[in-house]
Image (cartoon, rainbow, N blue to C red; front, side, top):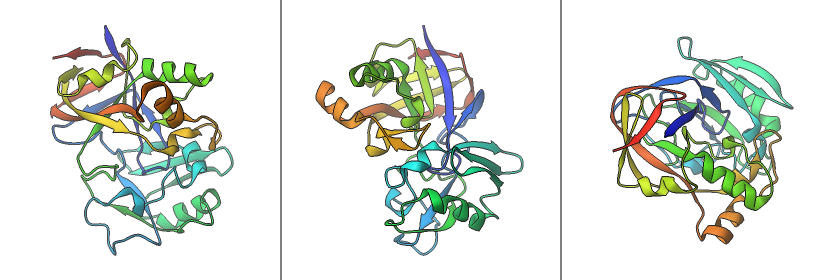
Length: 248
């Protein structure tokens, strides 16, 4: 029986991951507060953030590996985020009102040869994910373990910046879900496409340093650089860790 093992969101794009015990999914929407805010750098190709924009305009783990080691805790009622990092310590702030504090905290973690962080942006209801579609990313624990075996090390799930981690599947069985729907708890999601990965996944979320050639291992052993699948919520409902996952 397939189970929902973890629920993960990233309140600020590329700046911290947070595990949840439960969540409420809404038809046509992403996981609540996932990539709700983003840190815009000084070379961004737009003046104001009023709609979805490509990832190249924002701070990202692929360009600043130390960002991958940030953990987050969001207070949804206050819309404040507490961020922790092994070197930078802890900070609590409102992304809407304390943008400069966030930027100052991030500067030592960001590469000096990259465009500097400039401001924090938000488009309510439009996550600043890698695609404009309100996808929820489904990933498979067995695939992560299989890839780790090829690399000879345990891989943290947080390298992949996914949302819903499924257990009790065969390795790579998630790819067979494309074109199908799954029920998780009360919600239903339609699986749309595979997710092609970038070098951010080579970085260890505990250290903020690259230590595993995830892309090379995917290419060598499987002939692709895909990990996980994107899905759209087609029926609203609550989900929780341990929920049964049914393929419809």
